[in-house]
View 1 (tube, rainbow, N blue to C red):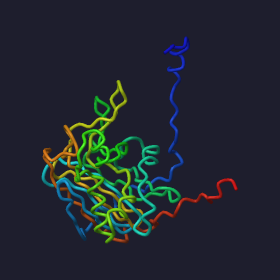
View 2 (view 1 turned 180 degrees about the vertical axis):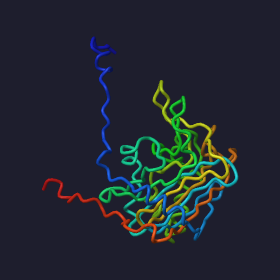
View 3 (view 1 turned 30 degrees about the vertical axis):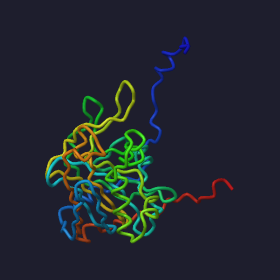
Length: 280
């Protein structure tokens, strides 16, 4: 490899943010905060340790993912309840908000919808920020642990990876085969997971999650959603995932109604306005 004479000058060029968000439609956080004061729990479901559960949330409801027994991370999929082809788009969410999301940021849907599916309204781990290693919580950079990568790296057939957990849960909810459900499983929001990229090699890393029982992340459902949450077989992901030896715990999903009067003026977002002509 030959290093060019102007290598230092090329590397010194200042970066430019790809997607400035000044014109991004902003959530009305004051409205959501007012609605939060009136919440009444209407349902709950538990994602068992090393397994997954599905849940439904109507537009205008709130939902929380909560640690209840021990430090545990979860892998979250969201779909439009009306059309499973519209689903959480982790890559665009990452491009708009960064590698991790917290209060005031949103989970965006796939093309052609590209609209907010859920807005983070409260995060008890918001204090964590970015640590000295470059790690933070609730990432949209990891894909989900899966049996294919496990087989590639370690051999064998491990069936409780988050990908398989989500596939089984979705198939059970839809009453369809695993083969029919699996294509709908997609890249996740890694709830409570503490991750980043190593500074020397740029590799994806994980470290022990700071989550403790009682911590939660809360969302406002902007559209009717179907969700699936896997309680990762890596537990707090301090050492490994796709494991039967890591200490694992269930996660609780709670759904809440707000007083409709507190959401006066709010409207569920429409599909993206692009005309889909693609220049023809």
